[in-house]
Picture 1 (cartoon, rainbow, N blue to C red):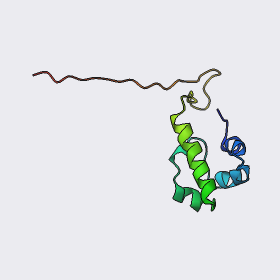
Picture 2 (picture 1 turned 90 degrees about the vertical axis):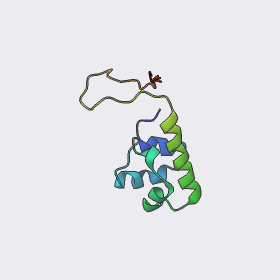
Picture 3 (picture 1 turned 135 degrees about the vertical axis):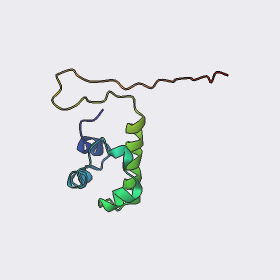
Picture 4 (picture 1 turned 180 degrees about the vertical axis):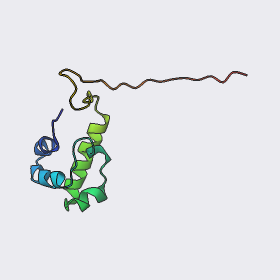
Length: 92
């Protein structure tokens, strides 16, 4: 998908805020967790821009993409997240 927040913001036409994210040390992994108040505190004052950033965060949260492995791991060490459903039955 995107390698960094700057690329993600550029695609939305909000690349001017890349410095705000860098200043507050917010990367792609934190983007889905940011709320309206967080974005406002970071200096994104326009409501429409905050909503656009929040929507991008939600898209990232629910998009099926491989998660990057720890730093220093070998080449090709991407892991795929998957959801499993487990059913339990209470025995009498």
